[in-house]
Image (cartoon, rainbow, N blue to C red; front, side, top):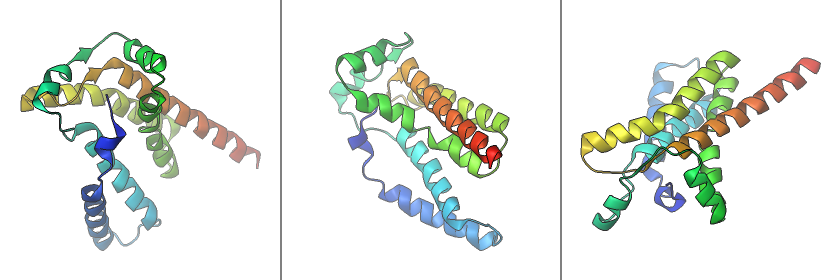
Length: 170
């Protein structure tokens, strides 16, 4: 379960983005769109922070949050029943920029699709491995989160196809 309030303080991500972006620009002066470079670095660091940084549960919550849900649509149905659309949209939109950024960088549609889907699918198993390795249950492992992130990739790919279709008409 992802709560937006846990991810508001992004100062470390912004500082890391500035440092990494500046180092890259010092060594590679021929980068055409410097702003896009910073956006990409920020987005990559934000994804790492968002999905793998400890959420800070107290000891009572650890047992509750060490669950694994492998039943498709169980949590999605609960979100809809509770009218908790923020978690639904959050999981869809968090991965949505990835295919768009890859498209802007002129990757092929095939590469964009494969890479984006692999990232969307790999997050939950990586969170599970992190829980096991650290022996600190940090995240709920939920198949519904993967389904929602795949939906975000599909929506982004639809937008890319629409853009390509209109670009070819011009």
